[in-house]
Amino acid sequence: MTNAEVCENIDSSDEWIRERSGIIERRFAAEDESVVDMAVAAAAAALANANITPDQVGAVLVGTVTHPYQTPSAAAEIAERLGTNGAGAVDLSAACAGFSYGVGLADGIVRSGVATYVVVIGVEKLSDFTSPHDRSTAFIFADGAGAAVIGPSDEVGIGPTVWGSDGSQCDLIVLEPDWVTYRKQLEANVDAETDVVIAFPSVHMQGQAVFRWAVGEVSKVARQALGAAGVTVDDLDAFIPHQANMRITDAMVRTLGLPDHVAVARDIETSGNTSAASIPLAMDRMLQSGEAKPGDLALLIGFGAGLAYAAQVVRLP
Image 1 (tube, rainbow, N blue to C red):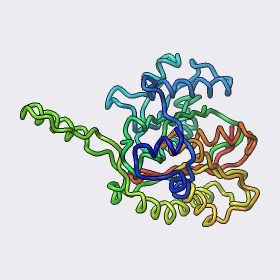
Image 2: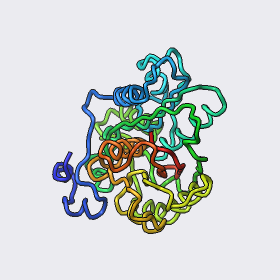
Image 3: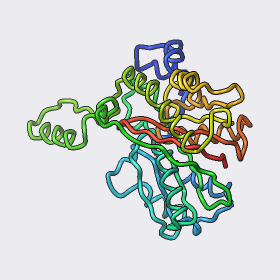
Image 4: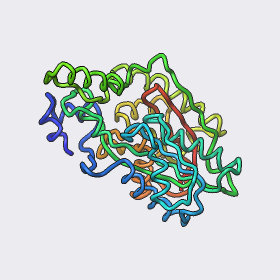
């Protein structure tokens, strides 16, 4: 989906979108392609790459905020379709930080012995929950899925996870109207026998406020994650932040003082902002392109609605 196509529904331009976000194009899933479909494809590829069979998987953790059912979870259906023989399964509602939350939880699950292998998935179909006419969000969000297998290792491959939230700013990124309000509006419309158009719940964002928060606070979390892992920016080979906005990424690179040898994920240029899917998608792109290689030391950091954040230093698979 090019910027030109997006601009058919909003008052904007390719130049403005590139300047404000760094995005040139993004991907939208097919109408009949679900969050579960995308997640199963990504997880199956991750299992194959790890040479792990589905029956070895003890847990499936799915970072998503766009599975269209309050219940059952996407994770339960994904675990079944993967053939995991009843693995523990749960969805994680941490928005753009969902994958990093999943990595942290999976690390604890494996270390505790509850499961030997955990599949962590970040997946979103934001096109279902974004208004194509909303100038503040229509050009940003996109669809995608990425997955990783986390298991035992003779050497530490995942550093301590630093996470947190700032609920005082939960109104900066919201789904409005909420589902209860939406249902009541529909019922009132039916009772009144009117044809009033009821707005479907969609994501709304106060972009400038989110930008200021991310630039000011997220770099502090990154430094905490580096300190918890006992490494410095000079030790890093790659920096893989949530692909929220190219300007946010560039600002964090400057604030952290990353050396030139550190490869920086800028997958947002062609993938857009895919929320929980952005970190694994960017990681895969870097590994496939050769920008990073297996065993490299990378800093992951996710941040978004909530406002929630999580970061850890990892060895790339």
